[in-house]
Image (cartoon, rainbow over all chains, first blue to last red; front, top):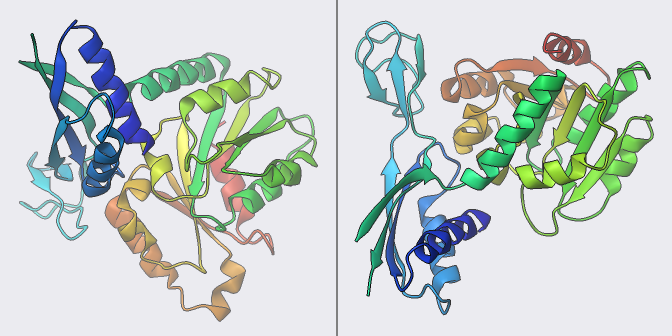
Length: 112
Length: 212
């Protein structure tokens, strides 16, 4: 809920920079490893927006996959079934390469 | 019109956390963020840790709970500065709460423990300016917690497997718990401890001392 509130604070701050503008859609990127469940986030966002000054702001939540990079063959691969080994060459020497995103990608506004 | 923002959702928290981290680095403070589900033994681990420290060590503890100052009272009896952060409903600590609470303790600590609110989900997203994160998992829980809460274990430097004195009475499989933790974080370090018998606490203390 406090993450949803942070999103809406940012929407209000950005909108206030543009007098007369109205926010209509916010684009977010949420990684599989961010600790945030996209459905719960959407639920919280919609609950906070409903009946507020931001109603009917819509959300576009893009899910980002959990990725690692192989230190042997350099391939970047998606981690499936919690298997951290390289999906291309099988090496076990890999490093984190994404999936913990919790980002505000864009805000769509309507200007007078 | 679409305005590209390209920034973190928690950028205000991250900004304060970066300030704290810088302050800790300048002063040579080691700050540890302790995360676990409720009842895994974060406070017990801190009790045993503080008990083992020489009174001349400069240690401070901030402990977070939704309500009550019970944990702070348990920890204060060792003579080190302890402050309770009562979040009043929030299920995690954030950097601003830490910054505020630190204003209230003498600025000479070299080790700072941040005992987060008992929760394996929300604390993960909030950087507190810590140098390391430890997650406590007790053997009375499921050994598949690392797979159920991968984000928390993925961001941890250390997993403390606690309550190992209870292993004869519970079906917990230690090897499986270690394997699951390494699947979500291949670099995670692991220590096995019992805060009741004291077993394994030397390993935990060695892990800490190696970071000071």
